[in-house]
Length: 181
Image (cartoon, rainbow, N blue to C red; front, side, top):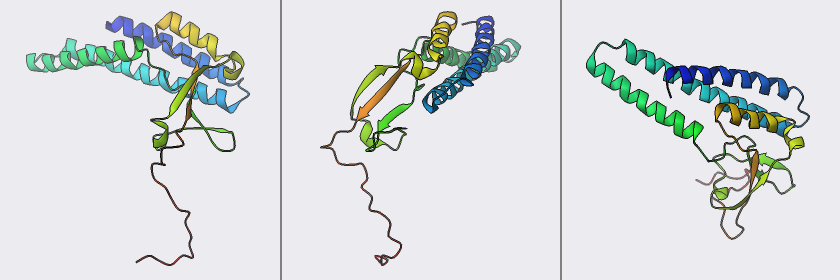
């Protein structure tokens, strides 16, 4: 990817970010607003990588020292690999819908890095309907068509294994209990 391709991609991503923000105003569910916010964060992160790519191109062109030019070329090569393979040719799902975990009450919450019991759990993937995303699916399709950034609209559900013990069992805190030492 050359610097002019990166610049054009940055302009397109900025336009899509505005479209997603405008579409977020019409969301009627918290789930759809969260999906819009996470997509905006992904677009910002991709734009920052492209901005750094352009800065490295300029640094390489302006470098007078041969050793400095070698370092800049090496950094540029690494960042081009990151942009092209992680962002444009990545087939892993992005965390747009959130990793959801069913609580006992039947509601869903976003699972985070502290939910260790979910990592080895059984999971299944479900495509999100258009009404669940409040108009985000056509934007994702257009984003994939114009920029090559393919973000699938799916949600991943986890079911913890009941035979596996919890990562860290915790007893409820009792402020009136005697101190154990």
